[in-house]
Image (cartoon, rainbow, N blue to C red; front, side, top):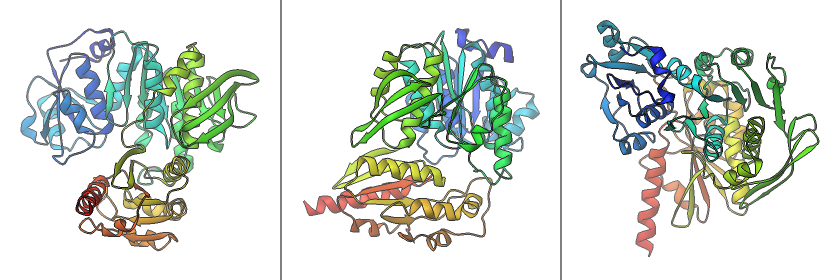
Length: 457
């Protein structure tokens, strides 16, 4: 059996070949990233999940990692089980593994062991984790060997890595397993009402992570909850206000991206340009600049790497069908919806913006309904789909129609077998947003639009 101490040596390229890492829930965003990282290190990796296609599975397939349907008969001697956060010990494969005496390692515990041999940088926050993690991994990876786990299903293990960049998820306090060197905290907001009792509970979770951080915290200065944060290590605030240690000024947003000047206190660090849209991406970039500054990375190299970042999966991912721009985005919280619509307005200021939103979980829809309506009303026209439930929910006393009744810019509920209402819009931007299976609606619309376009030619 592979012991934790041996696992922690993986980053030093000591490969353990006498076990196969079996991932229960291998298509999960973090799990698929970790599977790819271990595969890069030469380890044997396989796993199980639902048979339905998810956007994370293609990377696993391209790496040659076998994905099995959930089945207790998959479990046999010689496996080390990596258990996804979505599954408890009653899951049939985990249950059998424990009965057989196989080692079962929870995802956060495994990751905590991996990060110890590098300069580790976690990215936490109610929103913006994946985009910031991806940007940080890209920028640092361009100047030094960097291993990373991004919450879009991307992962990479680099021998003798200087940095380890990873997404630190607050849900169910999973991130309290980590003791990183640095943490970026993009914001604190109330989410996951199925677990957190309120904003005070969320703040308490972030305080725990702060107390376990070894060198420093980089926090968005305009977040009132982050300003209240207490820590024994320095907290470096970034933002656009005078009292921020790292400050972006002279921000210019165009249809090509954004540019801004950066100061640390009163010292000018330079002008930076990013091919990204939305105010949130200026802030994400500022966090990356601040971390790299403290790690003494040449800022000219940082400028160069920022220019070549192309984004992460399911975050403002664009395609063009007929005369329509279709954007796919993971936004499933009011703050994320606002950020996505803001980015779309920046890049397409003269086009009509159509939002197609799939509410994600009944508990979130009930808890944040008024905020959802307010953020969605930033679009020119809004459509909804039925609520996508999680495996932890079995229904709820709310429907998408209830949310639609609060929306002034439309709010009608689309059905998968009739996407024709979207055909009324031409030379427009249609944004599909959600964390569930919103892509099936997107693909149905694309097919309808393509067929109609073909017949008209």
